[in-house]
Amino acid sequence: MASTFPTLTGGKPLTPTIKDYSHKLRTDPTVSSPKEGGYVVSRARFTRMPRAWHVVYDGITTANKNLILAHEEERKVGSATFTWTDNEGSSHTVRFSGPLNYDPWKNTNYTRWIVEFYVEEV
Image (cartoon, rainbow, N blue to C red):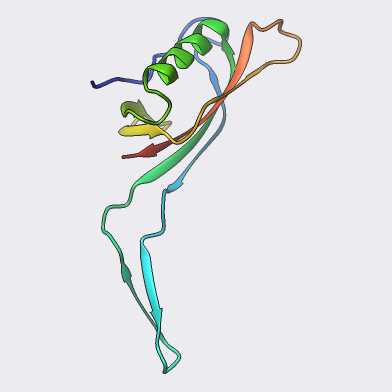
């Protein structure tokens, strides 16, 4: 069943602040083999280059946190894929690479949250 990452809205700011965002290649596809002459022969193990992202939303509302939590539970963390749009506006089919981390903002009485997650391209 195809799914899309929830659209986060409401509250102030109107959209959540992205506190941290990074992406990288998920794995290094290089296979290398040292030879007797002191040189190294290398090649790509595979040609597909899947990516991984780390995202931290800062100060999202409890309603938005609950949307993300429900999505995580629906996807059974990383067992099912979904469509996610990265910070540059490109859509990717991804899965969570581990459980999400939910931390309350200090002194907000659990009305604002920091949500951290990792997704990997499938």
